[in-house]
Each structure stands twice: as C-alpha cells, then as structure tokens.
Image (cartoon, rainbow, N blue to C red):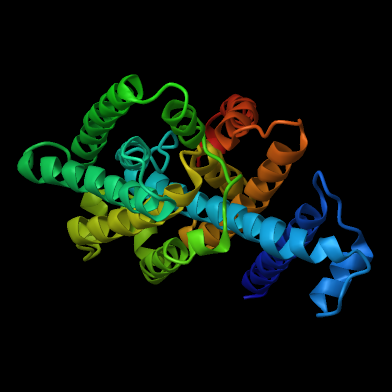
Length: 338
C-alpha cells in the first residue's frame, strides 16, 4: 500500500511539474519574438491592466496568444493521437498519419487552395479529407475480413495515403506556380503563421469531444495492447473498441491538421518520451504525452518564428529535431519501446 501511495504521489508530482512547465513555456513564448514583450507588460495584461507599451496588448492578444494556444493544442492532440495508435497497433513506428489522415487532409486543403476558397473552406476540406481517407481505410478493412485486422488497416492506410499523395502531386502540377503553389507547399510543411482565434473555434471543440472516448476507454487500451486473443478472453469487444478509438484519434488529428497543416514526428517521438517517464500504462501515458506534446510544440513554434527573418515551416523543424531523437531512442534498445 505504501509503495502504491508513493507511486501515486510521484506521478502527481510529475504531472504537476509538467503542467507548470506548460504554463512557463507558454508565457515565455508569448513574450519572445520580433517584437519582444517585457515581463512587466505581460504581467499587466494578465491582471487586466494597461501595459506601459500600448502596442504590447495588440501583439499579445491578437497575434502571440492565439498562436501559442494553437501550438499547445497542436502538440497535445498529435501526441495523444500518436499514443493511441501506438498502443492499439502494438507498433512503436506508428504515428497519427498511419491510416492516411494527414495525406487525406493535405489533399483536401490543397484542393481548397487550388479552388481559391476562403480559409474556412480550406479548413473544412482538410478536415473532410482526413476523415474521408480513414473511412476508405475502414471500408477496405471491412471487405478484407479474413486477414489480420491490424495488418489490413496498416496496409490500407499505406494505399490510401499513396493515392492521396498522388492526387496532391497532380494538383500541385496544375496549380498556379506564382500564387497557389507557394501556398500549397507552405501548408503541406505546416505553419501557424496566419493563425487567428476564429480559425480554432470549429476545430478545437471537435478535438476536445474526441478526447472523451480516449479518457473513458483508457483501461481497455492497455487490454488491446495485449493482443486480440487475450483481450477477447477478458471480455473486450476488440473490433468495436478499436473502431471507436481509431475514429476518436482520427477526429483529433484531422481537427488540428485542418488549421496547422501537416506536421510530422510529433505523434511519433512524444509518446516514446512519455513512455520513458511513466511506463506503458495508458492511463498515465495519455496525460503525460499531452503535456509533453504541448511543451514541445510551443518551443518548436517559437523557434520557427524567431530563428530567422523568414519563418521556418514547422514540419522542417520537427523533422530536424525528431529524427535525431528517434535515432537516440533506437540506440537505447528494446527498453525504449516497452
């Protein structure tokens, strides 16, 4: 009993420390940039008073704060989705785009840019494209029932992702090289440069609602990770639970990709880092991954808008950071995957 109490206390302390680090990182990101905001002005805005610099209020409230919140949500959602997919597919190489979500969302957004739709229309097509890709994957898996379910889902995701990528390449060839093509390329690399508070009003409620099944089914995720035979022996309807979890993780991924673009590596490496801290238990892994993902993405976005005069796309930075981290995790051996 004492060991369990100490374990619960240490986990609570870890969650508290990570939550505090999220707040500190967010406040630091709000004050850092091409137009720096002093600590006194930031504190004045936090308590509702007018800052000494009248421009600070505009910079923080209209530009920095929405962007930091978007980065927080992006990292948290991708990390949560990656944690779910890695557990239910029992594969450390799985990421949120394993079922073609990112490729489908990218195709939808590229189509919206090609048709010169407004930002809400582009976001809607990106969201619909991500969901459509996964529904195609699930339809293929439903037809091919005599094979291993997980293998069929993964292979179907590869096929649908390849088809969506080919369609995206075709649209890029047909797009205006001076106007549409740069916008398409920048979106596919991921960016929060043009984010506004209104851009997240439709996406984040969907992501928040999709988080609920992950929380309610957190104990059954661990059972699924044991394998279908063991899960069925324990009375778990593996097909139904896996479908619910896949749909929830897909909604989470598609909702944030719709306003941020395609950002890789976050859903792959952050769950591994969280697993190194708290172990494979999903009830502990999920909140840890969410907090780590938020911290990581806030830092990456701050670097993206501060490292050079021209903003660096998020996908480039996450690849530069994620690849060495992943090599380090592989070098640790099997302990890093369990």
